[in-house]
Image: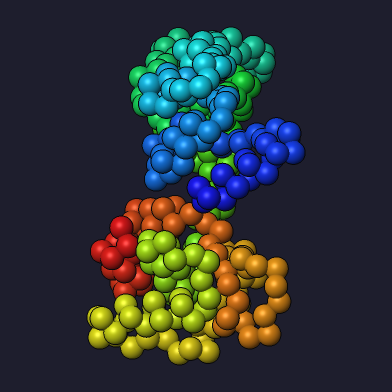
Length: 291
């Protein structure tokens, strides 16, 4: 990687061309396994970073040759929550003449539960939307959808209602995809994760097959037939769980190089949290071997 970057920079410099490197999610990037690459980038060029948490790059990765920083300040989370509270206050509703208004005690109970939901409870949805810089309308929309789940026995908003609303507005496509995989397909996925853990990527069916074979032999289990796993790989390609790593057409699919589309951490986390139904063997492999 470093030699490639040096060669690229040299070629562009000789041609008097500018080179721009864009690091997506810089705050997460500098804390991962690529810190050495970031340090080299800082040594070789002027680096402009854009970050909401601008103290992080300043503290850990101050460029030796550049002092150019653009801190981006987000809106205040407290202000957003206050606006959402004002919008959702039940006592501002103009009740129709033919519908009796609820008693004052209900108004107080509603306002208390809303304040608790927005301010007192630490819920990940608010922080997630806030970090994305979403406007107040998005917060209010989530609360409006949550209100459709109110019942006579539970007439005030709580975390369970917002959870239901979140799943309606922002469905977890990764979970839906994983829940549709068969045991053989999930076996192949874990084999790919095992290879990536050893920094082997991209990989062919033969490499994945031997990875799965080794696990089953280690635990004295009968492993699936080769033809069945090859069909499972074809389905993973069709459902875009994996994608070809090269545009070169291979006549023999078992030698085609592929890569996972989904992040291994997302897959393993879903299995660990029991969000995806898997067999005991798959669960043990994911939990004990790959974590």
